[in-house]
Image 1: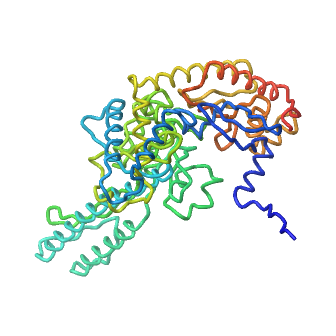
Image 2 (image 1 turned 135 degrees about the horizontal axis):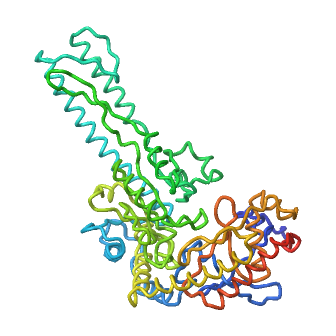
Image 3 (image 1 turned 60 degrees about the horizontal axis):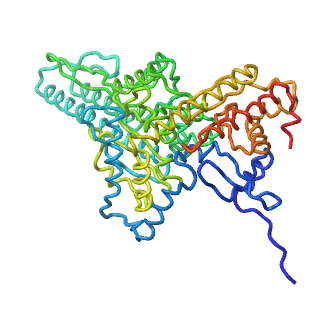
Length: 525
């Protein structure tokens, strides 16, 4: 007797059930350029226009033929993939090309950047956190050494009998005029300083930031649904508003701490405050993907740079989502003149067929020992390195034609989205973004007259239901983004066509008509 088939699902059961409930539960069987394909119930292959493109990872499209052929040649040549602790010239080749691009787009004198490789964007962010802490600890050690030297100088002066101890608001000691008074003051200063040095850093990030979902990077991602369960696992983050410079200054003052120093001045021992490096780093996305594709302004960029310069912490420019040409420039930070100390890249660096990421550190801040104390088995492998070199050559070819194409197509697509907003002002709130990194933001529908629409809006699922409808009726794949799900993302490849853009406009007008007419029944499957 045959055993019954075990139909339990061991991966993604909850996720797949949910996707099916909102009309997105489709398994795609083939992908090419800007098109996905699935097989319907009749066995026919159905094309779908893809505006998600790997969450922005496919600037050169699905299965780009040139990249695929290059990958095959790499494998056919039996290029070593995993040879840790050996010389790997491809790593330096990619870093050199990125340095050249960075100096072209964001001039920074004669600065050069050292590269550390990783497997994913979130891991790249974690690398930044680790290196920033290494920097911070070096600053703390230098400050502690200086304070220690000053204490010894004061001790020697006290032993020589030519100094007195002044009253201080920072430390309370029993006044007896003797050695015990001085040593108790020093002991209290050292105790408080030791407590301060043992404290974890505080990082800064913008409100509605998204920097990953690993143990440390999730603390930089504001969405409480993702972050709150894990707040006890890593250092804390202060989220500040990009459009409120004074709020940034207030945030810094709120976390400010001082180390105590013992000084001798004109025969008097005094205690003084020294600024202590509490802030680890300031993390900034030039275009906030999870916040509806909102673009950082030039004014905010200047203020953020000024904040980092004032406190001495590194500015981490997170280009994982916005970099690699998607906005019409290789680095989105070029558009607002944002100059970082660290840069993160990933997504399209893998050409759609490899996993790769890199962090670029200004060499005057880079700690050389980091190359040894940080490592990753699969980072900097030969295969992904060869793909990254190919991707960079393709993007830079013909004087950066790919960037011009992204800007041109993005302009056309944005014009269509703006026309939809103008036609449906009661439904569409805004169009945000730049280049091929755009979003259409719907107005709040929680008080809609349609019970289905209002219920889905209250549960945060309306964007997914609309995406399911557009997929079912128009064979176009879009997805919402942001904590509220009110925005729909558009991140196609540079192989988007004018016909694709026209189709997209028609599909959005259909969806907006449903919301305007409160025809919730049309959204139901």
